[in-house]
Length: 112
Image (cartoon, rainbow, N blue to C red):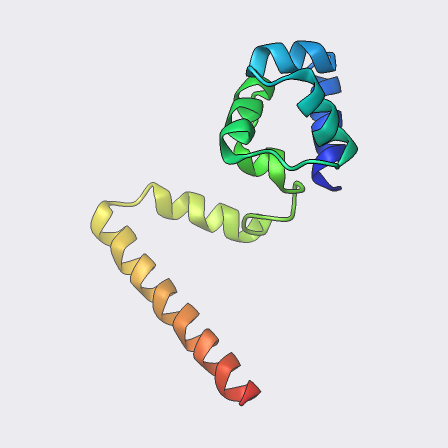
């Protein structure tokens, strides 16, 4: 789903008219219409205000549900890691950083 469709869906789910969303987000109603028509892109400031009014994260406003974030199995693992002591989390982060760099280096060497 693209941004205009997602904005319309979230606005309607919040039971807001374009005018009510515009008023709540301090954005002119014509801008809301342009965003929903796909003829204009909001600034970061406008996105933040829209997300606050619609009670969603910026990711929730900009990305599809499964477009960002870890898969379910990784999400559970990250949740478990978040409950660990700081030192353990630092070690796990360093391991992940190393594996990511290794993967990226492999991708580069395979291309060249």
